[in-house]
Image 1 (cartoon, rainbow, N blue to C red):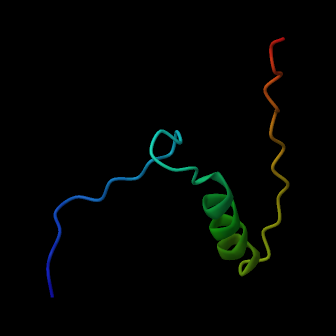
Image 2: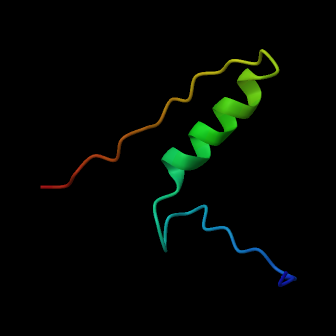
Length: 48
């Protein structure tokens, strides 16, 4: 098995949009411990 020394995580979305997957993974993990939360995201307003 190949061993890696580094893991790169793109949280700001410059490479791929990871918001949905990160949110779903965190929700799944926390729900197993009966921890529930709501994430509110602000939408960026489009400029005309």
